[in-house]
Image (tube, rainbow, N blue to C red; front, side, top):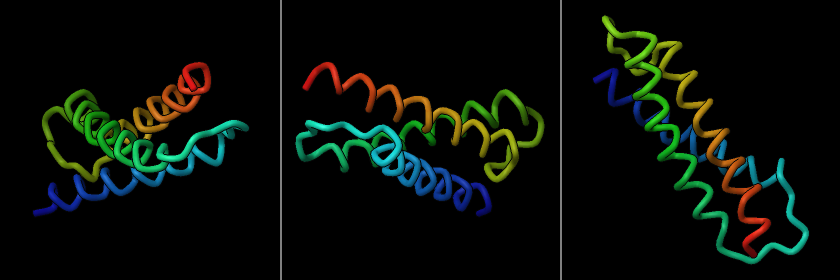
Length: 92
């Protein structure tokens, strides 16, 4: 049961990081609709990053609420949300 709670925390944390990236990387001529995409992208990135963090750093003790899982979730959510925000600026 603890692992499912940890996965839920990863998803919520990733969505919050994705939405906060909208405030950090401010675009002047932004179209609407990117808020939902940022939240979903951040959540999915945190899920993948959390799994990678647990697999790499906590190989013998698979706990989602470990430092490796939380660190991986935060790191990948920040990186992918920033790349999306920075990369969309050139496409719009």
